[in-house]
Length: 273
Image 1 (tube, rainbow, N blue to C red):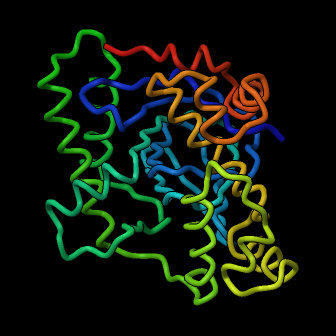
Image 2: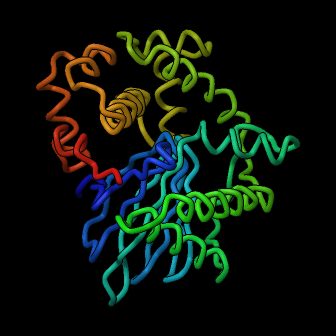
């Protein structure tokens, strides 16, 4: 089982908190993982089988899947035709900024239903922005106008349904907040368990049951996601290694290459228009 690899990713300077990528003829099942951003994926060919929590969902061509930040998921292409996708990832901060400006009555953090989205108008918006943001010939104003149309339309979808959360998930969400606030420290599972008033054994068991990963694996992936995002912004590998308490620069470089399929140097060389 392989980890999820980004393919042909790009950040357009008009929207520095939005990353696009695409995958062609995806043949591997990705291992359980999560993103710190909102993940919008359009299936362009084949069928995507996606597992989110205890749900198994299927997405066909011209359907969009939405994964909320921090939600562990994994999937693969199924059926006779190979799976190809287009992906837009938008930072949680940017999504909330847009939502608060236009929908002050929305609940935060903003959550989307995992149900497949099928809308001809939405698919057209998605593909038009995707192509414009990645083309070297696009006028900045075109990218900006189409981007705002897409982002606002996507955010409007959140009002159509919100996932139901158990009391346990709400309670353990505090543990994720602790991980996030202490991301650069030598935080231990014992420390987090005490903070949420659970024994280490019951904390690990309950966390894995609800989130799909052990607390340690979740914390390690969170650190790596943050490191990856910092690389995209042009930060030095050595500085990132210190900031997130990796043993050394080489250690971080190996993890980035293993998880994302690219060396830190390659990540930093994302093409900007």
